[in-house]
Length: 323
Ligand SMILES: [Zn+2]
Image (tube, rainbow, N blue to C red; front, top):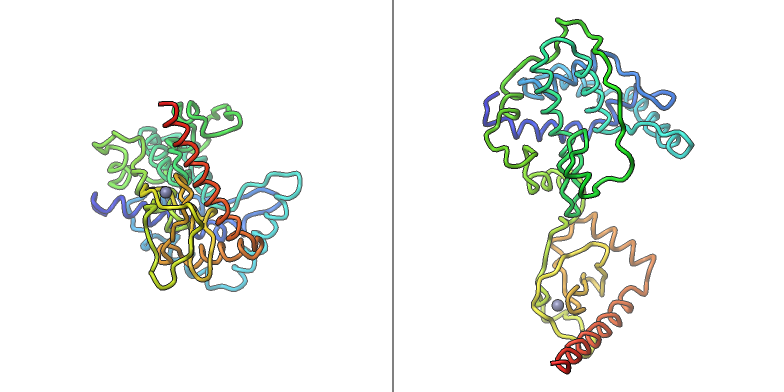
């Protein structure tokens, strides 16, 4: 692997393990906990942190074969269902997700007693996976890896108390050092641009998130004066006209009239057409369902639009009177 390939490689690994974590962990889930065999954790450490390309690791090759085995899939599936059941009870089983997977590798590395410089680098690089996992698509900027940063605590990004754990003495033998220093680790750890806490910009993190979730980007805007085609133009309520300001497109605010999608401008209340092309099939389906459960949504928005327009006029009038 070359230096220039490191970022892409990390993203590829992240996405792969994000999508497969349940299937990897499933068969080892029992009584609300995991007992991962050491050789599996060793393999995972290699897949997360070595300079071997993911597709060339033994883990990848074996796991891709395993996924074709019906018995294996059934076993994993049953575990995923059982975990959901357990979550409804009074216990709090760990999730069968990427977080648990990285956490297991982290614990394993913490237990390493030799090659301490590289151990520190590995824990640090692993934090990049945790940071990607914390991305939320709502404009809040996380800086924490596994541990909370002072920045995030100050900005109230998490609720709950900080778990204070006693550092345990490592138990692994001195020569048992797992993944050794390599170009993947060093490129991330020794990068020149330490301007950001994270190796990834917010935009890069957002792209990863959106490639794994069927959602609109939180910062998608549209201009209030955007018009639909003349022929199927919606008749807007009296007293309303576009203000020409940008506003955020939000899935939960979108409603339908006929085959078209609309959202009220958050500045002036004008009903603005949302182009179909920016909405994925999944998003359209969710909007469709929300309309089925609330058939008055269009009527509500039309009335609200006119009301807001009248209220806004009132506001401007009151302001002018004052002057
Ligand atoms: Zn507007």
